[in-house]
Image (cartoon, rainbow, N blue to C red; front, side, top):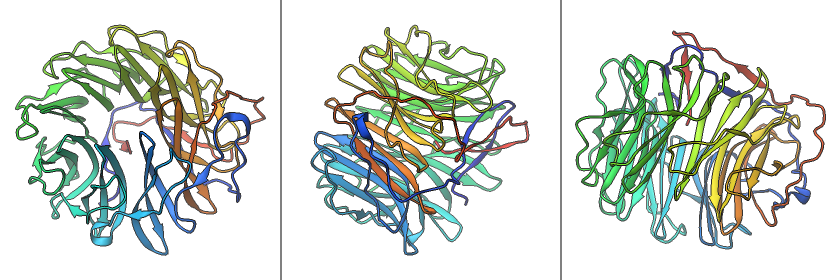
Length: 477
């Protein structure tokens, strides 16, 4: 099985695709007065490291990535106990069947670290799991938790108390994909037999999202079982032992809906996704106040004639913060943001956070102590750099963006976390034909953005793709 699962989507899906064929040098330029530490590599110096994962808990910073060094594949983990000032020795979590890993996810809960990933060997893809009981110092041997006779990919992970929940996509003959679920009630020592949440014979499910709160478990995904792609939700109220027989169609419209994101807080279930019912893709939002049984009518929070896609969001108290990539012209994409102060009933007019002549994409969002942080990658300097912007007034306005690495490398797959007025960034950076995992954290966070030089597209936008009805979309979310 290929590492990316394809599915069919209707016309006018605009995607931001970044080309990673870049010119590279040998050193990261100092970040100067950006307020961030100079970026340091935390991955193997001779390896090819990709797909960073980042978690912050107190003074501990946990970083994960996948790696190939000297022909050997690995799922790597590194920990800092001093808020990112230094990182300990890398740990190879152990790769089931020594296959090429992909799609790593890590979660921290009560001093334990949980990891799932996709392992590929001999034309089969399986889901592996590993756990640390000592705050990331050592890990138990990895185990396979999917059906070894089936192709499985895109694992998602959440933890609640001693309960570990994992979902993924399973492919059957004819490239049919279904959402599969398993759980552990003993902290990841053993797992239940994988169970199918969807049972399509001729349609496809997309990458699931998973969340848990108390005895409730929620799964959200998109599929085309009703002809067009819609966003669905299924829930369990008994720790994942059983799931509702009726799946809720959250989007339920005539267009294609996809790339959903979900947040659960008690009985409140929040969802955002992209939808092209109006002829172009918009960002839609809906909320359930009864544990996902019913959802409010979806609200269009982007509301513009250009395509908007791939939202990320967070919820703090009664505030809902949403960011996404928005097409401005054929070569200009910007990062937009919208906020609700009433639990998602209404949203303010979107704000252009990046507002540069280049292509901005892959936004991440974090909120800490009333400050809102949005990071992304932007090719305005000529190659893709990691940018971040801060709002000190709860998202009403944003300070000028900061170019964090400000160098000659191509950077992407930015991840971000914030805690106690410190922002942590991890990303993948090109390095002489391979990639490094880079890390930086804020110190004073002084916004400074100098005059923009003439744009040289060392890294370019591959295209704005208008997909026909017979086109195939490869997506990683």
